[in-house]
Length: 291
Length: 324
Image 1 (cartoon, rainbow over the protein chains, first blue to last red):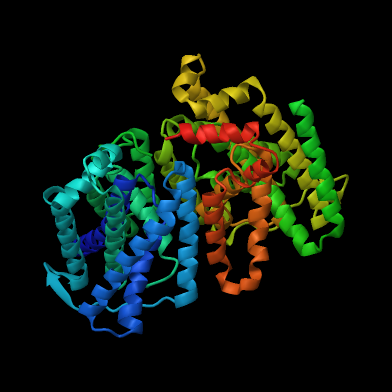
Image 2 (cartoon, rainbow over the protein chains, first blue to last red; image 1 turned 90 degrees about the horizontal axis):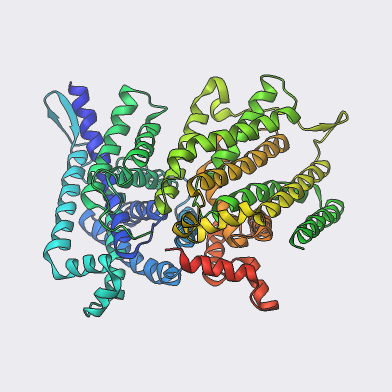
């Protein structure tokens, strides 16, 4: 039972990271209609922004995290201007292949800068554990869950209680109508990329101490985020959270109770099952005419 | 007339390949062989994506399924490659029908992610089903094709086998394109609802197109297995599926010439960029991106600079506008 508890906490923590990555992906999809196949590389960039600030520059950790997130926000703007804007009128498949091509560039740019040797980011809570009911749980895992909850709550507040967030949802509903209402659509679209990049950055920073920072980590994260998105429901924020935690739990629990070799097959099997039986996922897609 | 042009194209392929087989050094011949095999897979993808409009990110899984069936039946059961190949193609097409029945109800990015999941699942199974696939160690010593006891094992003679296969595939694909069936496929891509209204069974057509495309992929997989003579799960990862799609779009979707040009270009491009050392993949991604932005109809779209937009260009553009 203590084992199960410990595994469940780890599953929730890694699931929180997948949820953040999935939300970053969903926010961009909702606002711009772009299925961003570079979403995993965004998370990888987040981790390596942490490597640059914490390990290479040896900044104290509050400044380092702030600097890393600032770099991610700037990257979001850059991506909006250089990748999204030139492709915004292209058919969906061209956009998919375009983001894939850029993700190859991102991965190899990181390889050139940081090398292929995996690095470990220390957590500010390095080595701290607490005992809960006989189970030893790392504080970093608990903090990851807390930060995920905080970010999700903050995002909900932003989207539903601020005029900026309501404007963003209006653009997601109908770009033309939003423009006619006087919303600065271009700015809203840019901000959705910034938000997406920030969430991916947070996911990457939290993931750093759990995995090794490796330039190839983007693809596995992206695949899990996609699975989470489908299971939860394409374009749904609560869906992305539930889906992410579901994928994290199934990965950690599946690896210890079913088969470690086939642990990834469990989440993808469930994802494909959902696509067959309930393609709108658990929470359904609100906007039907996208994609 | 159209059919004559396809035979003309087939002759051009044979002539160009024949000249290249005499002048190219061994290593470039190997790349040329890989690109010819890739173009067969991409022509197959063109049926699913270019004609029917199905976004498949799992094409490499079908290439892999064909290659694995071929490899297992020749090394384990001692079957002749000539017998194993049709069996592999037929089995893969049957699998595509079985998986297509539930899968092809999905559209757009749902289908893209579902086929991506299919590809990832294929690699996981191939890496872990040790008794059957040898896991990540792969399967070695796959026999080459042989004609009258002459094994087609060196690069030069394999090129001839690959070129003959490619011309065959091109002729079949062109006949398909201009048949009643091919036009029906394209009508499903352009407007599914309208196609249905004219009495076309769109579900059946989509599954047939998908199966056709999988059969081409399996054919390419068999050729790949007998060419490289060693396969492992990594050869069929979803990165390869994306690469096939990139080849098609860079070359020019919806056209057979584009499929071939894209395959050759994207197989050789990393080689031409090799002098950049580690930076070459970073530049590769950037170049593909630039082609997508500045040549939305692919390399075949360059034709319009030579002599106004052709019928193909216009139909591709019209399709791009229709698609959401």
